[in-house]
Image (cartoon, rainbow, N blue to C red; front, side, top):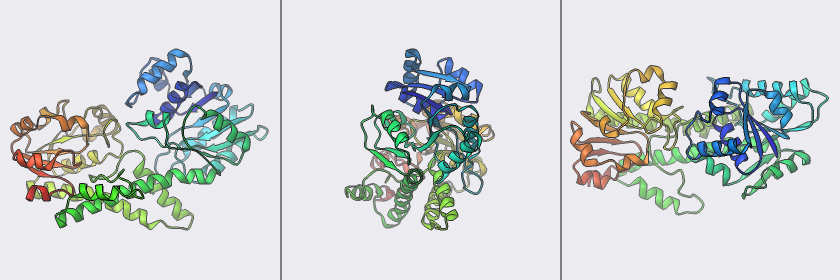
Length: 438
């Protein structure tokens, strides 16, 4: 099939490349000429495992192309995806200016029947607004609007697209549904067909529930520390119940990234606007905020005064296997440490360039190095902020020898408390501190 993806950011580029990989012909459109030049040169502007290889393969095969022309993309395609950013407004609502602009751009060039697909995460009833906008500016052209939410996890987005848990298609048009089902025929996954409003709600409801699970286990970690229990064992016992499951029950510094904070705030605002306040989600947010504050208090209580203390921080990205530092808890941690006068040396396998780009002022206030061992050289403590697997493979004896004192604050429970105790570290983790005291 012929597809156009308008918006060549994280979702758009990954979606377009994976559709091309399974045999469809795809044009990715972006209004940023520099980004298109980069893609045409065979480079991709984001880090996502496996994506660069797929882009190169599908471009070489002729199934994936790039352009700045919306008209070229709309003329080419049977199905046009909208995959532009939906950033948060200060009040937590979703900024839909980019969606509205694309709808007007499509209306200006559409000449024949198309299926217009909302791939971006949008509030319920956005599809209705997109349809109204296109109809206002192109009243003579037939089209359908579909909601097809993405469920991509950064760091495993390629696998999530090629081997999805489910495919959600929201539409009231049999013609559009048939084309979408044909589009997804190469994928082996359950397909849920709903009305458009239900499809739009599914993404916000799913992400908010996952954020709830994270906040639940994080609050439970504080109870475990107070009670002398092991949050890992508690989570394991809970997860053995098939009704609950083990996923997203990992205690740590809290959720971050470009999805969970934004989607939780948006869903809270949406529910208020609909007259059905979702107060539970406000508490999810409050627990997430408190988790980082509690961790920083642990650092402060141990070091007394952070002013002029040299601290090593492992991790900048909001999770491993991505370079995304947007709304990263690791970044917020560093911001707080710097605000108290600490001298931070940070490292991250993939996130340092993104950190410099997104947080230039904060980046100028810290030191960044490639090597985790270089980061701990002469530091008074090590702080683990992102659970990159390679950090778990660093020689701990060497870490201990380079630290001023063998003091580690593990915000991701990456290291083993029993091992740290045996090696003579003073080790603070999340919900497992009884092991160091026993």
